[in-house]
Amino acid sequence: MPNVFSPYKAKGLFKNGHFATIYSAKLRPVPRVLQKRERLELSDGDFIDVDWSYSRDKSHKVAILLHGLEGNAQRVYIKGQAKVLTENGWDIAAMNHRGCSGEDNRLYLSYNSGRTDDLTELIDHILQCYDYKEITLIGFSLGGNVLLKYLGERDNLPAQVKSGVAISAPLYLRGALEQLIKFENLVYSKTFIKDLRKKYKRKMPNFPDAMNAGELSKIQNLLDFDNLYTAKAHGFKDAYDYYEQSSSLQYLPKIMVPVLILNAKNDSFLSQECYPYGIANNHKNIYLETPKHGGHVGFHETNRVYYSEKRTVEFINGQ
Image (tube, one colour):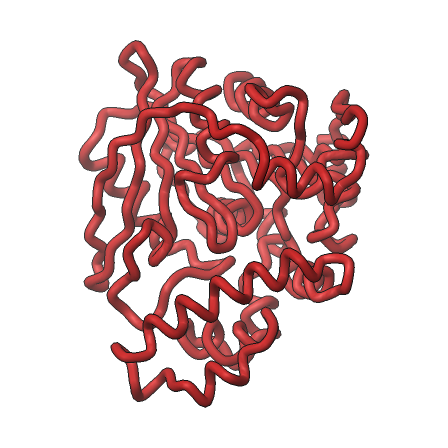
């Protein structure tokens, strides 16, 4: 499809990408959404926790929500999207990536930007245990890359998977990493690495042959973390091999269901490769919307409903 015109225009301070990003993550009131937790035991002996929310009336449609790096299903952007969707007839399965639900996961490996195995198991579980006729996948930041890779890397999708929405998605991971380690993004990268170092330290006693204080001392930025943990734990040669194999950009041409990619032009996390205008212009299933404003997951209209939230409902209900 041709690239999609975006009617979104931020107001006042929200025109600034950094303000929109920080306000939306830290200052927006958290929408009230009831969640019921289910633990899914995985085939490799680990687990993920899934937080369910429900439409007022019985629904045969479920949206799987995927959060971003070091997020969880209680983040404001997940609850905001869940609230709007439940008000519009969708049930919600908000997936917490391994180790992100408040309890460390059991294995040395965890999650990463391209690991789709856990999403695959969750979808299989939903199809086996619930009576949903339609599934949509909605991912934010890292979660957006995961869902796009999932949709594009396989020849056969479950028939119930009808659509996807990726918001502020780093489609080209090396470019996104290079953006994040720039000085303008120091506050974000420092927050991420602080959280990741804490998680590494908690894991150390359980995996002394693979993790130690000496290695931890070498982890000073996100590239270090991906070299010394992510790549090692998940079978990549190094961080750059991980970025190359896990970037969803290369999988977009093979996507067989309609997907909306909503990436703001002033998102400081994203490199130019994360705006695939050429692919969208020549692909019937890729809808690329790139408003001037929005920052990183910061498409503010009102505190109650963000543009990205109502746009997501509009898109998936139109498919």
